Length: 170
Ligand SMILES: Cc1cc2nc3c(=O)[nH]c(=O)nc-3n(C[C@H](O)[C@H](O)[C@H](O)COP(=O)(O)O)c2cc1C
Image (cartoon, rainbow, N blue to C red):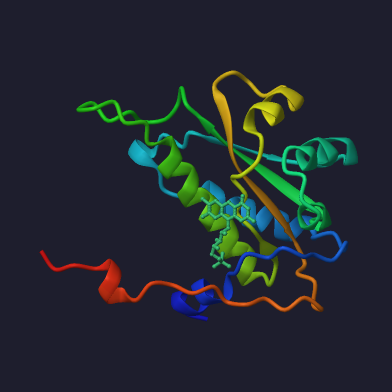
């Protein structure tokens, strides 16, 4: 599989089987996050993987959608704002960019392993921060539910803009 094929294989999966993912595969996708690039190599991130049903329930409450609860695993991807690079010219915090790269590494690695994922940002971040007693400097930025895709649920590819629409010669 070349990179384009892998990128095409990844889709947002919103229905999962209850079968747990092997620890070997979880370790593999987390390793792929670990090696992601970041501004000045500051690696301003922390990943929490929910182990207990109690923690899973708290995370599910922050994004109460039926499909979300079907995922057997969830990774809470946090930005450490005290560790991120702030561009000296305008103080722009690059933590958002860094976490996005690491998260997409997770999603692509999972797709390569025939696992499903879905980016979730539309959750109650303040609620989750409180419920998980996260450190002050950590922002839960993205939730990644993952697991084995439900084989009975069809995944429709989503459309993309044409290259001519998004690329300009200057
Ligand atoms: C930053 C970001 C935030 C997203 N947040 C959500 C979300 O909260 N809930 C959801 O169901 N999908 C969410 N998505 C998934 C997008 O809807 C999805 O990636 C997009 O429609 C393209 O579909 P595809 O992932 O199947 O290619 C998010 C995606 C990104 C990149």
